[in-house]
Length: 352
Ligand SMILES: [Zn+2]
Ligand SMILES: [Zn+2]
Image 1 (cartoon, helix red, strand yellow):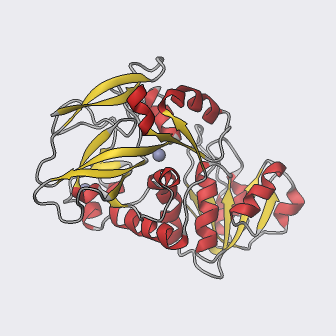
Image 2: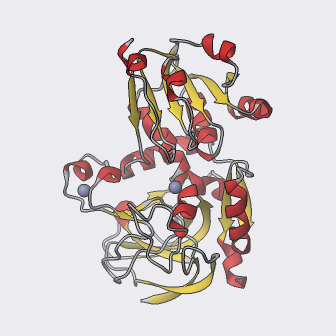
């Protein structure tokens, strides 16, 4: 065991503050990573403040962070894919049971026994796992990703959650050249969805409530931008979409979007509105449309996504901050005052 500097919440109401946490010494299958950048995901704030306490109570102290990019500092004797000096990434998962049908299919994100990067039971050290707002992390090789060396590392970090969350459903629902794809909401998730859909060759339409986001949507790769409050503009697209990714976490009229799908079209939710959405059955019945959800991605697909990003030079648009600004960043994130993700430069932890 060794100690490392980190940033933690001591309770649901306390701001994050610097601390020291233990990490295990790497065992034979482990990779030890010096963390260089960690993205800030909205989930970090929910967990740090115990806002999902009814399903996933937070154990304190809580060290958030599951968009981790760093450099390998040490590997166990049985590790074959990494050596010291390599770039490496860690996303939302650090382990699973590895034996259930989901794990065997490479869909570890649906494993009933998955171990999350933070706030999950830590089998090695006891207590709970600690995330990426820290100087280093030790993860079993199977859950460590290779990060293409041509990518900006601050912008690559959020690929490990925001990136895979949007890439996975597009691959599952067959987004390719010639398909018409809608993206609802242009935030941390939505801006990545636009980049991926564009790179996959689709015709991309962004739906937004904010007309001032139009230029940015076009810059990110959208072919068209529709202001969703404008019923006429919406109607022009009725029955025309192969796939729509809905990344909105606020309450909204889902039927308005389902009606834009063509026959057998699919709308996938990746946002989590606090209240249940009202779905009109007719919107689904006519044209055999489907509504589904998706969460992050398995380890093989996360690697595929990172390799795709390397080949297409895709990263997240980030604002890099020192760890000292994390509490301020949380407040700004609540106001959607970030384009489009915060990425913490962990070098700042040395002076924390
Ligand atoms: Zn996340
Ligand atoms: Zn499993």
